[in-house]
Image (cartoon, rainbow, N blue to C red; front, top):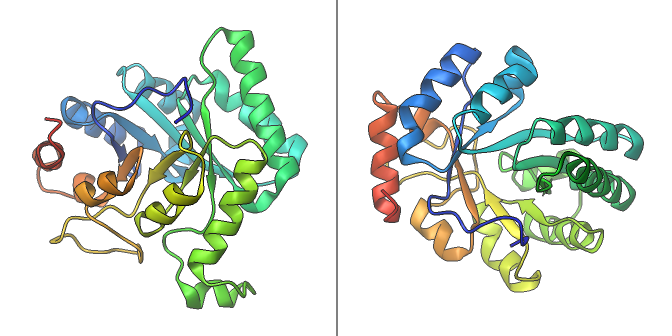
Length: 243
């Protein structure tokens, strides 16, 4: 993985996909002893903005800002600059933005981190959303099957300088086999056998995903929707041998 990203003692990143900043911070405090960090996505960011990101950062865990930037290179570079100033460890862009956009994002993160005297965040490329299957790809005019589309976008993104990818757990083995070893792979779609799938269509258990090469595991509903989120997080951590 990128040299400035330490192997995780605990690879679990909890998706704080809850409606309000108060709920997110309360959830984060409950589960913090049992996880490695937190994901701030669109739902939470649009209700709490940069302030909620700063509050989560103060807990001392990793923060993954998952806003999936996708625009012209100059606009994405400016958005990445602002996100870097929040001092998060991870953030996302869409690989479909192409090589120029990817290069602009990576350069912006490095330049702004250097100015702040911090490690640059790892820019993660989103290839095919884990909610999408073959029928969904066909509906938007993509002829490749899911696996080939993921592989094509991943190869292009890494060639453009990206240090990590978000991928379905079912793509982990192929990506690990075909991409350079340092590439970070952050994996949503993690479910225990008893969990509902929700809108995820390409899923795997946490132990299996780590064994297949995941760098970090993003887990949402199995933790935040549990009757006891702290117990759910602790149980998953114990399953992974990190509690």
